[in-house]
Length: 338
Ligand SMILES: [Fe+2]
Image (cartoon, rainbow, N blue to C red):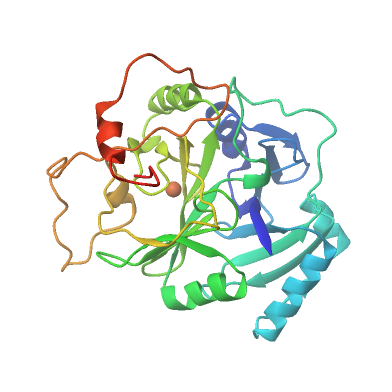
């Protein structure tokens, strides 16, 4: 059904700030769309990120991609049968989203979702706004979004049972969260229960680890840009840091995210929400802890957590030596998985 987070749109009162941030800091390519809209490319698609003064400030538009017209019709029928009001958008609106056809509807929290097929491909190659090797987007989509929802059960039912998202892992304590995938990317959407409705962050993934490091240097050259320090997540194994954007959400800038395979993957309950290392500041950005929450553990008070790096062809070279940790970790394990 849904194959990827094809684009993210949002309302802004600061299109020029977005123009600077998306190109000079994130490395996206600005596309001339005219008026109060700024669109940005990350790959061969005409646009992946849309900052639009015509959308109310603070509102987000999540563009979920399906395979073709038949899949879009089937999704519309399924939503309709599930009691969700679906609107068929005009050709002009579809064109604005650089898609062939478009429907729109709301999730239980009130977020505007769009589903589309036929994302348009640009005639010219992607030219990054600063010197980066590129984004890991394509069939994996823009990246992932983490949204805060007031009623997580309602959102879980909607995304999992109606839209067909699959759970990668979840957290029950000290808060409720579900990380869900629609393709190989470990999660394209995370929902976290909290007061109100918000988008905490958008994650974009780089091909080159060094591009994340250079991005970290650049971010640190701006006052108050870095919201969360460099660190490694325990579930998608992403090495990343988080930046304040010109809007009310953060941008996670990452490398080396793991993939999940539906044939073998089973949802995992995470009992430890801390990162392997780093990510100082992350929990402060998620809001104040509830009064009955346990105090955060002292850093590195338990056993160290490690996992192999996830690399693509062309960005690693093997070196001589053996890894005692990996040998010990895989000893007696038929699968070799951690
Ligand atoms: Fe993230």
